[in-house]
Image 1 (cartoon, rainbow, N blue to C red):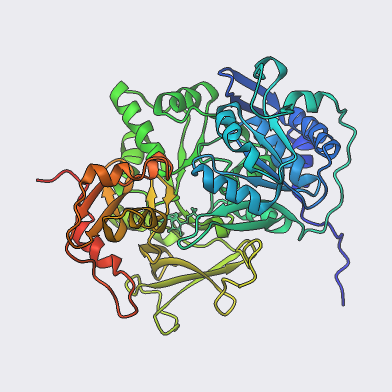
Image 2 (tube, helix red, strand yellow):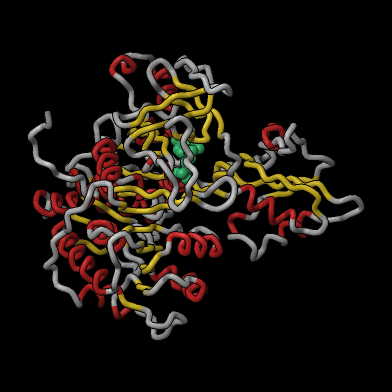
Length: 541
Ligand code: AMP
């Protein structure tokens, strides 16, 4: 027997429709690339998203086609989120911090038809425009007044002009809820980045789960400032969940330093923010140095890499801000676990509560997880047994975009993280089975760096490992063996990276060794190197 309730497909456009009808007067405030503060309401957002959907149609964007963005967190980026996905096309957010060669590779792989970008990124786009063979239109996300008088990009389009040419008479089409809505590439540990293609359904279910009290605990009484970029995993879903609950949204644009963020927190009455630990380091040092307080912020979500317990304590004890420690992945849309205590844990002594909250947290409904040993057998949830972490759920990747091979193992997604799970269901990441390096919350591909080093004529073998760093959590450290009789200085090795990779990917130091340990199948045993050199970049003594 079939239930007799309405069939309402889960669609991204329904979030915007709800925000317009039920929270139409709520504010969206943005620090613009142009330098000023822009403010409008969800009603304005919805109207302009409809105009933009028509503008994309006028550019010839068809359902399913990809529209790329290279943009900061701001209202125009938000309009693209809704206009592109809502009309049945696919929003492809590109990470401007990647090396240009990777950007070109990703945009070409995704077959982006249109590229919309902030003025900050005009020089990058001008440099690569002729290599982006598939891109038919380049749109600068600004108004006529701020358009350059000339550009290396022929027929550079102006976002506000495209918008102004359309009225807002547009009905969001009814879509199958499994239609693709957005695309985000993750950096592969081997080879090229992989695309994760989210659907309307997965996005909506993730949105619902992420707002729950035991998740990010979002409500219409919140003012949310996502520091986490909209170009990486949809800013942890906040552009969707804020609309769903009717929260005020505040976008920092390019101003991600402690001072700029603090000013926005205070002037806009921000109650909740979200970002990687490195951002909070900058904010906390500013606040400490100036002797400031947070007058409205009461909680902050920290994830992307492990939140140091000292940071958690500082936020809570000194500033009265609750830290919500979350773990996720591009492949998980991204939320996998959130560190929120259960009722029984509230009665625990402070130190024990702290220790629980320093873990990565527990899964919301919709995500299931398990840890397994090398034989594939499930390990107990005793807080001690560490194994490979696997997950499954309605917002977990099934296949990568354009790749045939399934990443799943018996219908579970192997995360590449090694973890314990305790009796309360709190997961704790103890290690990463992948060898990538995470600097300030951003991946650095160790194999890419090794490949470059190996291209130097004096180098016999190179391993790049994550070394602990006081500011960036981790930075790449290069370990090199030289060919017999060859000579190479540290400086010459580091100079060799210039122009071959984004500058911030350059290793912080080079260590020359006689031999790099190899395993039985000829693979470098990087964990041995890490054991030996992981403190190499920390102050000695
Ligand atoms: P990405 O797909 O770039 O978001 O990276 C996902 C990876 O980041 C995970 O597989 C973890 O290795 C790491 N990660 C994310 N959140 C945390 C966290 N709270 N603690 C430790 N590692 C994390």
